Image (cartoon, rainbow, N blue to C red; front, side, top):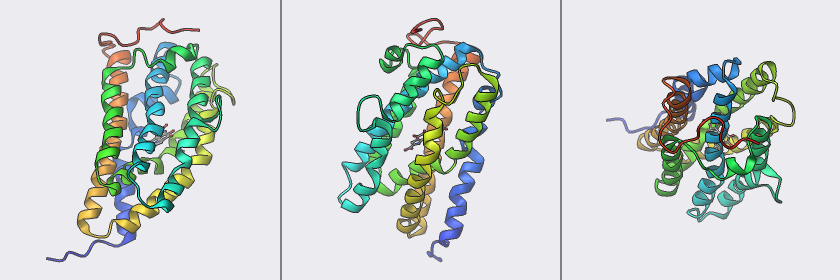
Length: 247
Ligand SMILES: O=C(O)c1cc(C(=O)O)c2c(n1)C(=O)C(=O)c1cc(C(=O)O)[nH]c1-2
């Protein structure tokens, strides 16, 4: 049997196809949000739940770095933590997300308290952090490659929110504007690293499976929001109720 892995180019195309087929830009909740169809409650539910994802990203990057023995790889990775945490209080992606929370009428302290996060959001996000902590480094880096597809959704989101919602302006959307600058350099590094290290067919399969897992993590979060707050609007016990945590 021929054990030669397909070329770099074919493998990259395989990874990109996973985004074409499964990235969460195709989820109906994003269509609703970006086209102005969300109620203020639904926007707030999204901001509250998505905060949990944002808050765990630097934790998963710290978990990743704790496993890396190569100083070059750690040096390349560490800016991801600073992108989210900033270098001082009030800076960085998490602070920018809380500005968005405020703009949509939520008390940022309430959002940061992580009260009312949907159980399925928690399960999905925690699974991502554990995956990055426990799986081979190649899988951990490959899972971050959904960011290959993020700039397009961030651009669509900025345009859609600006067009349809009063809360949207340069300040409230600064999180997404900043990601447009940060994500491309992270993902260019991550993609090259995966292409360099996925040498065998088995490696390539493992990396592709990791990327699929990550698309599932993202999709599951939006399914959770849809079921709780859109249709059938069945809010699980303990989860955020519209009207809670307002400014
Ligand atoms: O708005 C989005 O659709 C979106 C998606 C993703 C992603 O694809 O995982 C990330 C982000 N945003 C993001 O802002 C971000 O900082 C980020 C970090 C990571 C990661 O896996 O390390 N993904 C994402």
